[in-house]
Length: 181
Length: 222
Image 1 (tube, chains in turn cyan, yellow):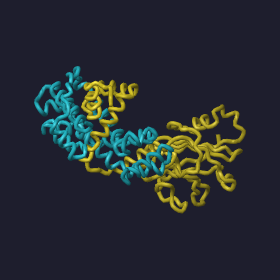
Image 2 (image 1 turned 30 degrees about the horizontal axis):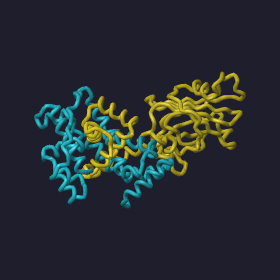
Image 3 (image 1 turned 45 degrees about the horizontal axis):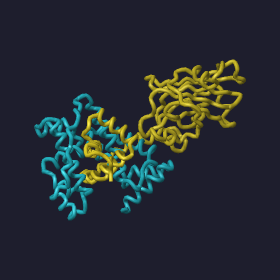
Image 4 (image 1 turned 120 degrees about the horizontal axis):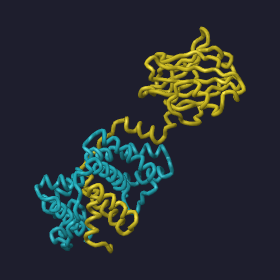
């Protein structure tokens, strides 16, 4: 565990014990990254500020749910933030579309090229993203980082919504095979 | 190894990717709660995709975000007042209502003489009702209306005759407070005037009022 991760893990453990000074230190250490995530997903400063506050309320009440053996503290904090911001984002745009049943995804098996990259890149996702078709890797990034929905992505790439969903589901399985062969 | 189908592996990935619509998201969230193997796959996806966050440069949130959070989680922490809080109350406009709230019983059951001061700012936005129980030497206040602006506090003063105002403490933003009046001030309370001034956060430095008078009213015997 890096020094920063150890510090965050320590602060989270203190926050779980209702230590307010640790909560403030955690806020100071983590809020700039978490605010960046909120801003990028919600694209509205006011919404992002509200989301950041909600996220830290969840952290204050739920720090005891952080399990160091399952995730790094930074990844856990990022996840709490993303889940809240994406729920908010989807609620704001509720009713704009609903998904039909997903098309079955056939397991393509390990992609030889991606596997080759995996061994040299140490299972990093960036290496595996390079194994996807460039357009699909970009769609994965737009979905994850920018919070684009299937509807927005299907309009961006001018493909039917279900086709877009199939692309991404196949890309995810390909990434999974690459990351955990 | 997981016993999940490829479709479920993809669904867990989609959940973490964030592309699902609200209804599907909440259905998946319910599944995470009741299906440990599915939840484990979601957690793995969270770790797998987390490095994509590296693309985001940190952005410092505005200071108001922390203040709002602190006020929400620890409402008592920002108050420097020594007053003891008993219960939160909404806006009140009359001292009589304050008296009822304070004693929770008809005023006739109260032993000693009572004095009230009903302070309302000129524009009506700031209200404070004070009730002084002469026999107990205790005052109760109910605060309503607009709170002091950011970085400012309302402070309560006792004005008796021509003497300099004596600070009775910093006001809370809203609610009720009970405060004992020190023995030496009790004689001054009878027929005195109470005033609220707008002061720096934490109260007037050095115990001398610096801000404008927001509202004032005489203590009247009821």
